[in-house]
Amino acid sequence: MLFNLSNLMYMDKFSTSRLQGVKQANLSIKQSLAPVEGLQDIPCYLSSRQKDTPADQKADVNPTDIIYTMFCDRIYNILPGDTLTISHLGKTDVYIAGKSARYVNHQEVLLQQVGEA
Image 1 (cartoon, rainbow, N blue to C red):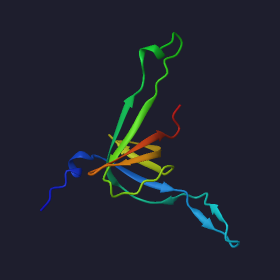
Image 2: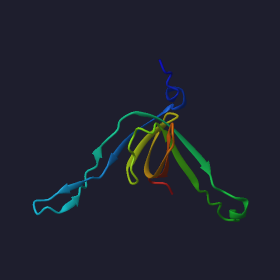
Image 3: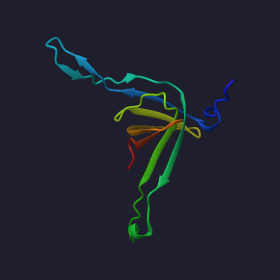
């Protein structure tokens, strides 16, 4: 029996939704305005790191760029533009998926937080 390490590593959960094309009567494809629900409560790990250097600091404002990355099992098909709802440390936030990098035992998805100032 194989032991699944992802249960220990992935302590967060994510759900996805995406906009899909709808075929019209004239055979053209129109993008649906209502998101289609996809994956639900999938184990993952959300990581964030701050891209902030001392050279960026100014007297009146200190801009911060936070880079979000989600790690999950490679079997899930997450496309750029998918909306991900991620529960991390008791807080739920919404992100837009960027490009996914698949590796032998996991995948990493770059994220952009929705509503971030």
